[in-house]
Length: 167
Image 1 (cartoon, helix red, strand yellow):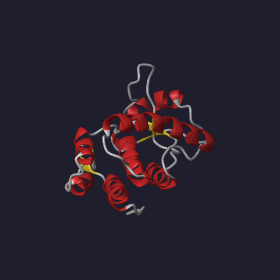
Image 2: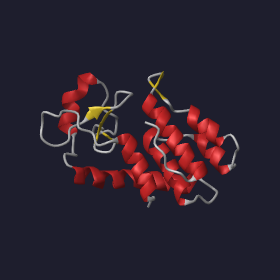
Image 3: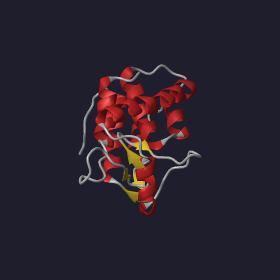
Image 4: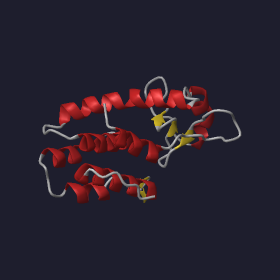
């Protein structure tokens, strides 16, 4: 499992989604790249595992939504983290401390994957920090402040063991 600092990092940048404040409970909302998410950034998918995308699919996203309470969001968060931890265990060949594991988990939770970052970690590259804060910071080609802040928080946690928020 990941550390409390790491959980705090992920939840800070994901925030509990409540797309419609006029309804009771949590509702889905679209993220910066148009994917419908719920809870702590849990992506909503169709029966084939495809992301539900775009404003035109709001009704579909709502019909497939399964997270309506904070407790359900927390449960799904820990379910969603498990495959990421397995991915890290398979791809990272060097020991990681709790902060490094958590920072990389946050990155993968948000992006899905990066073979370049895996390589930089495994080689203990001095370029890791600079790469981390300058990549995966756009949504549909446009730099997103939230992603810039998140990447910096992750990179600082990974390299210095310090949890800081920049927004």
